[in-house]
Figure 1 (cartoon, rainbow, N blue to C red):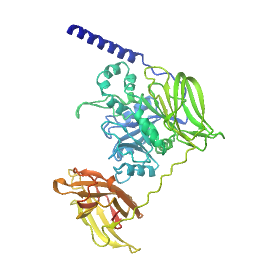
Figure 2: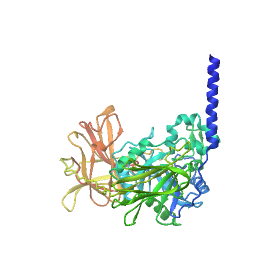
Figure 3: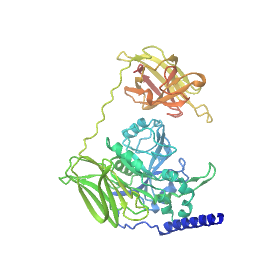
Figure 4: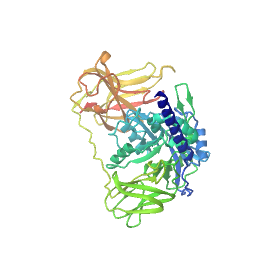
Length: 558
């Protein structure tokens, strides 16, 4: 009996290896030799170098990109922001390297590009970070939103540019069983097939995306999250898979409105502007190049509306150009539901009449082959006759109580080398305010913490209130923390949220339920035993040597 079982297992293993070998040896990219239109630029998104946790240099990344004739690479090293990565924008080996960052936020990770590097850190709160990048004309994409270890958690955030619908690194982690068993042999036989086989149809990510587009405008992007690293431990790491190997799998096709300038910063701004308006589509490039694909809308008067755009009225046509020498299937979706299914089309243009308002997008699949269920092309939506979303204004709440009506209220707390001075004053309008002058100084290379704070240590009950409300301005644009602590001794917990000041007075309010817990086991909802609160600037939001002034009008609770 045991011999028969053993033979059966050997037979099954041999059969499995035969299937693996067959799949790898017979896999070939479909041929599409159409030239890329001059204003369509092909690149890759979400890359890590040795500026953070990648193993390669930007020179290695650009050489690999140039070898595959990529027009651009978007570098997203970790940081808030990563200053080296942000400053890396340049032309290298004929490829445009766009310096950007992947922010680590309380809600998860978010890739951002096109922002202005400040002399303070971007905030760790998702909505605050999105707003800052948005104000700079940049783009923000939620990274690997459903990752098992670092998922996105703040689905109340709005105004980001889009979502990573496919993240190759996330899918590789998700399919770990395949990675530990069949993948090594598959990779030896066909690296392209082995890496592509990690990808599955991103049903949940697409549902999230469609849900957001029912109320706003959000775009989808395919991301590599390449590190050129396989880490077996902190000390044992291999350069695998290479940047070049992953570049063959997923691509982003961006439709720019002008040729890329030889000035790298200008060229990067052109690509980022196209991403911002949603004028791009994505492709699983290992299946086939998507050169020649188009998706747009023609109004009755002939006006063309490209991906990401808004058509004024119904009655026009969706146009799909599918000039491929192989058959494809197309799913056209309206508001996330199937609108039209087009099967087995070969080298034809498709026109679909539109009679109802909605959000229209499309997915293109290979008609045949083992990987025909993957969304080979994912195009961004066209918004037809849909009223532009206008979020209602959020009024600044009226304080129900004022904590520091007048006179000295706070004391200054700081590390030894930093400087801080607080004073109560009255403005020209007769309104009292508190002024903090500060200079941050690190104690030594070994002591990384430094801070200056306005502190109020007093037993308080915040439970009848919803949050803080106040006005503030600074000698320049800066970020500060508002922090409160509850409990005492071993039961103490601290909660914190950042706020930005500019040179003009600005009303601010922060609900308690948006505060992030720094330490302790308590909840921000348990505010009956507040023992202190602080307004502070430190190494978490500023830098050694920073100096300036902060002015606060009375802080209230609403």
